[in-house]
Image (cartoon, helix red, strand yellow):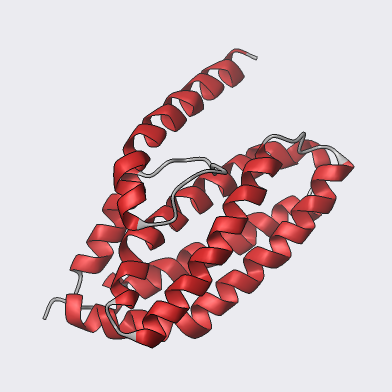
Length: 187
């Protein structure tokens, strides 16, 4: 089969979890005037990461039986709540004390979610990946390329919902990002 340790989806997700933790640490401990840019990086990473999990990882887990279904359901419920909080945070001023307080609660939830994934999802994902080989990682990376780049309160949490709505939301997000970047270059 076509699996190599560096090609595993589990490894890619673990690397992304480490990057999320790093970014959250910078936001939590950094100066308030430097939070905005790092927070934008975090929002983008989380948005594409969670979409890819919803479209690739959780459907694969559900195929593994009742345990896979329970684990997928618990993690997607956490992700749905995190999307709502992230969307609310994105509408706040990152230099404010209110943002910092809400962000620290959000950080704690994300840390707990990542730890739950590492403990409960990774073993099941490794089982699913043995059957799928590198196809799963390639699908995960492909979804990330076309995923929305912002959290949306009403975003779907299913693979089908993401297939139907995700591409349109992604286009809007990427245009919004380009306009924001263009404005910041002028300033």
